Image (cartoon, rainbow, N blue to C red; front, side, top):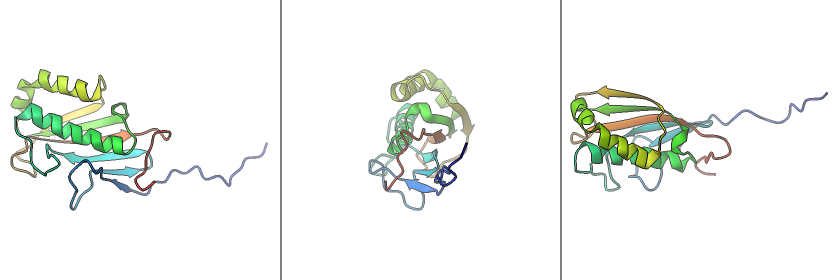
Length: 151
């Protein structure tokens, strides 16, 4: 039996920025970084396309921030089922907990019944002073759906 060793099966691990046009243009950061089929999703607050934090409290800020994460995920060919880890930074944990049912309903509306490994971490502040939440994550996208920016 002969093995063809000339075929390169090593994935391209060169980090590539993923910056969907639907999100505000980043400056000094990327919305996501793809290496191989692993997408590292940069911290998303509730910034809208006009670089303004959406009003309405923690539920609306969660909707916008998680929507921003999912927009970046989809730009690389991913779907919510590809999320393997989510970290949520919160300036007011009791407020988040008090709205847990509403936030859970928003999660299911946007991602379905997909629950990756998660952590919620309290913090004294975020980059934008009016931001109540920031979400980061990691996704592993199967090769058959993977979209590398520039391809």
